[in-house]
Length: 355
Image (cartoon, rainbow, N blue to C red; front, side, top):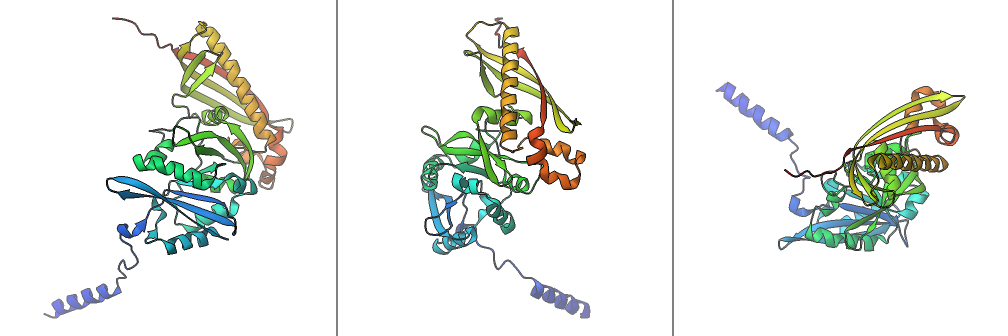
């Protein structure tokens, strides 16, 4: 009997020490934004938007809320105060910055998002030159018919294409505090016949906009990291090929006090169109020369803009004294010597043989 009473007493005392889930909100009382937009405000420093898809009679509707404040956290708090449910960023997919904000630098804004611990670090970062409210209202129309449309645009197993550079929140924050690594952030606008249109990519130098590259150059950045997945490239006017494999060998060293990058890229191609009736050897030669020319132009622009999204400086971290790393972008990177070889081979002509 005493043992039983002791067990009951221990059970009751343990129950009293449990805190429970008193601060958990039911899912029906939470708003789950998928996009957060940040731009300069008219009366206060920031105007912050959130886009929320809501179920409504067997379909989704999109609501956009915004507030102005001198801090992002204050603007979000005021939105949270005025709507009928609490904001939960667990499903946030995209953080969208206005171009003017990025030109001035997004160090403080990214620091808040990482410090708050309320936003998933795997959320994507993008830039728009379009009016933020107009952009979100346009994308909202597509979300109403397909709730996963926005996510699929960046999904490698869905609508993503190799021309689109991907910048994640954790990656962008890390590059801001890195002396030898930058990122490219995709520039988006609402499409005329599609939800989104990819314009090109912003070259970042730490936290600030340093320049801009085209869609074709964005493909080169991804191809450097062997991200291709069937990208189609036109060459020689009326000839097009698809990249089916890419093997990139990188070697770095010093020569006469200058950093040297030796790059040898082997590309396998699938011939799609040949309206010029060229031979395979001619197509391979022309494509190799064209890709070599494009990469040389890309490196020249990256060095001129002091932006290193290819992470070339990472290869020199063990070749520079620690106190010299901070000088990589301004002192050593502009002196980088590039030696590039590109070898293209058509491995599939697409010929169909009859049985």
